[in-house]
Image 1 (tube, helix red, strand yellow):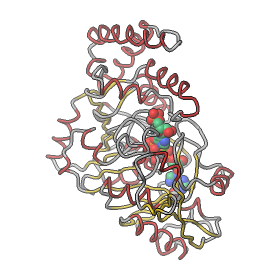
Image 2 (tube, helix red, strand yellow):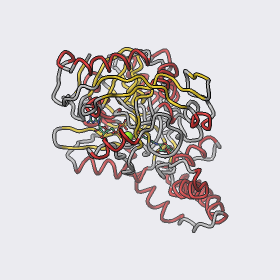
Image 3 (tube, rainbow, N blue to C red):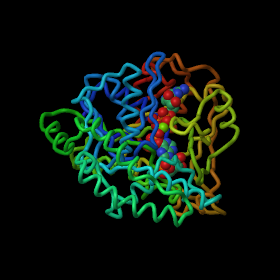
Image 4 (tube, rainbow, N blue to C red):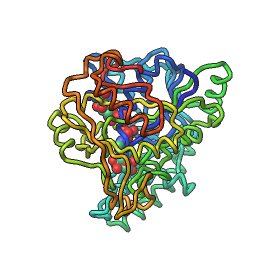
Length: 423
Ligand code: GDP
Ligand code: IMO
Ligand code: MG
């Protein structure tokens, strides 16, 4: 399969977890390189559902190695909880099955509190974050005041650094009218989690380079999606990391010329959780999907906002990420529709836009211009082969791939591993 970067081509929740699990069969190593436990990647195996937040979705295949790279921000208490949940679900996690970068930054309870407080102060201009402390944690990283996994596994050093951080953050919390956090509680719980994680911690850059030298193949699991990217997304309604393909290099220490292929995952329609402009949002498709019990967030349980497929967005995503191949998920979500809309470009006043504007207020003013496709009006969930898909569904998939500007490689017609059509 060569070294492959998989990214979300929309606003997150495109079905990356499902596609990663499917592709892991042909990879040796799966790497997460950005984001934190704001991610929620769902994998369904038989009647079991797994939701991965920090641990790569490759963990469900016991012979594969999973790596949490330096670009990820880790809440160690939450990571221990995730490992325990997986163990209780029967997933075996051996010492050399999971590796954690010693250079990854830590998320603390004061980051979560600051995330919530900043959101509350923004009022109706809030971002709608997952409240996992992601923005403040990456903020500390950029400000060069963060603590890292390598600190956590040196208890004396950690305690000393944490004491100073708590002093500083309690002053900030006080100024914002919030109660202080307890140094002792955080120190104890984090050192406890650190002991449980210690055996997984290593220099993952060296590990990945040795693996590449030995000819092993790596799959990079993107979190969030292109339009939540801190540089290229609908700023400020974004997350705080580079969710696009370049983030896989910086967040893992694997050089760009070692990457062979980029796969973009997108839904056959569009969803978004949280605030921010969303040109093709439409309650018609939202009400239909929600009434089927679909499109509720894997991390926060929030109802996702839904809209038609937005080719302006996916075309731009193909450009930024260098997407070679597309995996289109949730085709079955459109099974009941007579007609399906696809946005080909935007209009602002009389101006035609082929790419999203940088200013999110301008994006909010964009009117989507649609073409319509005939629906197939029959269930696709049991289809195993491209040639068995209804002709209208094949036409639709070919059209959205063409207008996005990449090759259709996978079509997904349900959450299960076997509901995946290789085109
Ligand atoms: P991720 O964050 O990109 O990994 O996506 P999520 O797991 O947050 O959300 C995608 C949702 O769609 C999950 O509930 C998946 O089980 C589900 N899913 C993925 N692909 C398909 C599909 O082709 N059809 C259906 N019905 N569900 C899918
Ligand atoms: P996966 O990996 C969808 C959104 C939040 C909010 C914005 C900022 O499952 O696709 P943050 O907590 O990161 O500061 O929130 O980003 N967001 C996601 N939306 N899927 C995700 O991850 C997301 N992670 C963050 O809803 O709008
Ligand atoms: Mg998700």
